[in-house]
Image 1 (cartoon, rainbow, N blue to C red):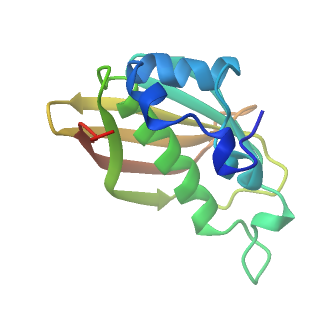
Image 2: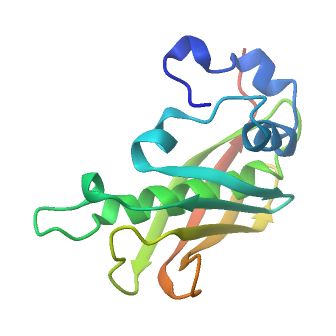
Length: 159
């Protein structure tokens, strides 16, 4: 289920009552709604483990640039999501994360309709920052389409 309005999203108190891993598992299992960006960008959370998250998605015509190829923002969104959510799996109860910066490298054009796996792996999760890497690969053939890296801020929100 996708969140269709702000009222569908869990409130901050509920989010902070869970560890980051439990929060991500709730989205994967459907007990918490998937963020609305997943619907618009055609991807879903597939796998959640401590330090590792995989999204499964497929670019469509709506995700193309003016020359008809997959827009770089689609790659960036998938990589930002998988890398930052991998960091979230390391965040303790009462804490949250946000992306500080990320970088992507597109290695080849992704044909429309190609199902991909976007995998994020946490390299470091400390008191105030998390670092992760990511890859977009073809779900069927394992071809590498893009790589990325991120630094996230880990913080304790004030409810």
